[in-house]
Length: 304
View 1 (tube, rainbow, N blue to C red):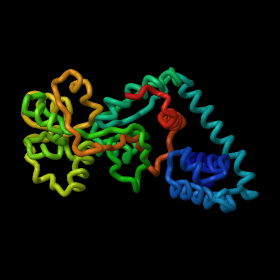
View 2: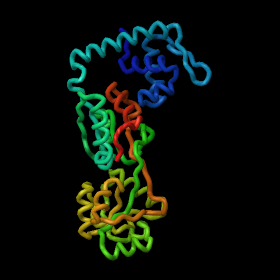
View 3: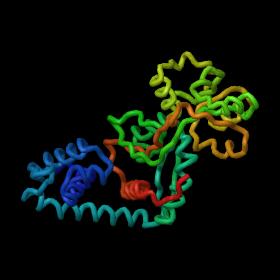
View 4: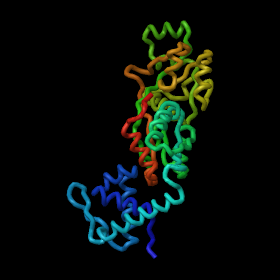
C-alpha cells in the first residue's frame, strides 16, 4: 500500500502546473522548504523522482512525474466532488479566522463584506485574542488564517503586510496637554507620565516594547499604573485622566475627531508598523482559505 496524502498530491500538482517551487510556495502560502519536504515524501512513497531541476530554478517533470500527474489531478478532483456531495457548494462554507484587536476592528469588517460579495454562501467563524493567542491557534491547527499586529515568529509563520498603521501616544484633552501639543512636544517626551499598557501578548505592546528598546529605554523604567487587555477600557481611562497610553492611530480616530482625546507622534516621522495576514509555514490552506488570501492581496476591499 502506497503511503502518501492529499497535501502531498496538492503540492505536486501545484509545482507541476506552475513549473516552479517558488511560485507553488507563493500560491499555496507555504515555505519553499515545506514544499520540498512534501515533494520528497511523495517521491519516497512512489519510489522515484518526479521532477528534474532546470535553469533559473525551473523544474520539469520526469517520465514518472508525467505519468503521475494526471492520476494525482484525478484523485484531487474526485475528492472535491466528494466534498461537494457532503457539503454542497455555497452551503455551509465556513472560513475560520482569528484576529488580534486592531485588525479585528479595522480590517475584518471591510474584508468580510467584500469577500461575501464574491462568495455569497460563505460564513465566517471569527475568534478574537491578542497576537500571541492568534499564533497559538495557528500552531494548534484550529485555524488556517489569522490577522495580527506583530510578526512574532517569521521562522515558523508567513506574514503578508495588509495595512500600514502607526502607534501614537494618547492623552486626555486637557489644557495642559493641548499646550504641550501646540509646543510641538513629541510622545516620547511624555513617557514619564503614568501610563496604561496593553498585555505582553498584544501586537501593540510588542511594537511599543521594540520602540522602547530602539530608543534605549527599558519598559521597567515606565510608570505603568495598569496593564489592560481591553483597548476600550484603556481609552476610557485615558479620557478620564487616569494616565496616557500608546495605541494604534486607526483605533482612536473617532475619539480624536470628537475631541475627547489628543494624540502625540512618538517621534518625528511616526512610529509605523504593519498589520499582517499570517499563516503557518507547515499548513496547507484549503481552497476557500487560498481564495480569501488572494482576495486580501488584491486589495479590492474597503480600506479603513
